[in-house]
Every structure is written in structure tokens, then in C-alpha cells.
Length: 165
Image (cartoon, helix red, strand yellow):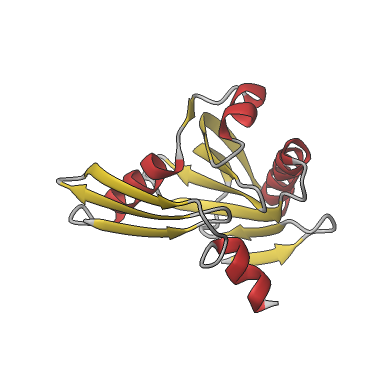
């Protein structure tokens, strides 16, 4: 595991050192406060990830993700062969269009897909994201109920992040 922060503030990690060409899927989460990327190999193992602030400019944040991905390749001594791109988060549609993503997925579906992948028996997801808080209920891997708090920022990710500073 190698981890660093580059000159533009992107936090970068190579989770599984590799060499040569690596076939990956590239997932991008464009949120109102942070933008993240994860690279998964053909076995759904995380090769690396990138985290950075969106800073009010999701297009620039994603450009910097791509720059950080190239830095990850150079530092790691490998090359990504990106076979698929998916987006989620508040900027998923815009960035999905601009990046030519294969899929733009809403947060509830993305959380449910990830939870069931990690634990097929998952039945409840609590997500504190920047602008809201969500509780999603699953049955047999399928969403059957989701509640979202839009009323107040208290208890959401941005509130918690501000309090931790």
C-alpha cells in the first residue's frame, strides 16, 4: 500500500501494487464537497483510489482526478486499460456525459450495490453524505425502502466534517 498527497491536493493510494497493463473499471463519485475515484481490476479488487475536494468546480475536480490517475500509473510503474467508467453522486449526470461514462448511478443504487457486494445479507444502509442523510432497507439484495432527510444539514457528512476541523 502506497499513499501520498500530490501538489494539487489530491490524496492518492495504490492499494495493490502491480506492473504492466492493468484492465480496470473506473468509478467516480462526484459530490458537492468531495470527488473520489476507485480503480477495480477484473477480480473486483481495488488497485487504487483518489480523493480530493470538489471545491465548487466538479469539472476541474474530475480533470484533476485524471491527472492524479496518470501520476498513480507513473509512480506505480503500470498502465491502466480502462474498460468501463461509472459515475455517482450529485455530479454524476454531467460528469457522466463529459467523460463518456458507461453508467451514471444514483447514490441509493450505488450504496445498495456496494453493500450487497460486500455482504449479500446486508439489510440496512445508513449513509451520511454531504447534503442529506439516508436510510435504505434491502430485502434479498433489492432496495424496498429508502428514507432521506432533506430538512436540515445537522447529522449529514458536511456537518460532521465541519465539526471535526
